[in-house]
Image (cartoon, rainbow, N blue to C red):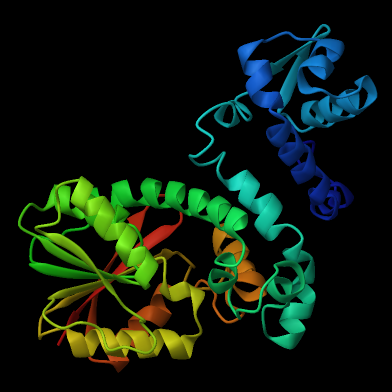
Length: 345
């Protein structure tokens, strides 16, 4: 073993003790510790306890963990933020801060049912930990307004990050009318409308979401080019009249059979030469990574739908060909997202 190698037992401990790391992070964030120390650097234990409304010993425990895991730095008796915790001191509705409440309240307990979900081949975590009767997370969120708000805050922040790069890099110069399936409250649509002034966009989503999207585009002065319609993508045919179809962070939630059915609907809706654009987390074709592909796949299977995972680009391209769409490329976005593109033959 060289000096730079980590002993196997230490590496394993980092895995089986990871829940402690997250709880230190989550508790500190929920209590406002990082924001406090950023605003008043150098506070000592007793001062922090008073500001947070905690007794001194619980405060010592919290500060010990945050220091051990690099979230705080101790200088003398005073505590300071670090580069690791600084993004968590403000902009709480933006990533990465927006992820922490969702991980704590939406994912943490439910993921304890991962093994059972694998054995039963369905989302046991959702059924055991999130109240409601709907078979998917998205249905149950409607029954839990506070959790739904936490989810949408997190998703909106992620969509803004990816959407800005997507709007800048995806070439839609040959598209006159784009159908954005599951397009939500028009984050991608507004980016595309700004980038391509002659592009018309139709968003297809659930009725309540379509209403919210139309209200947003009206306020933005885009209603002449962007509109949202009610669409049940699984039970309705996709609207015709478009020459491009976008699935952004939608297909990976569902089983291969459902994905192929949705791609077939897209092919039926498109004219010859029409484009299809699948924005999805990336899984390497050899099935070895990246890390986010593994995390999201476990989440989809245990909580979100009980049937999806992050698929490889090769799988999407095979499914394209099966419905008469010729793959035309892969556009990387960020570290672990990709746009898989194709054209109808």
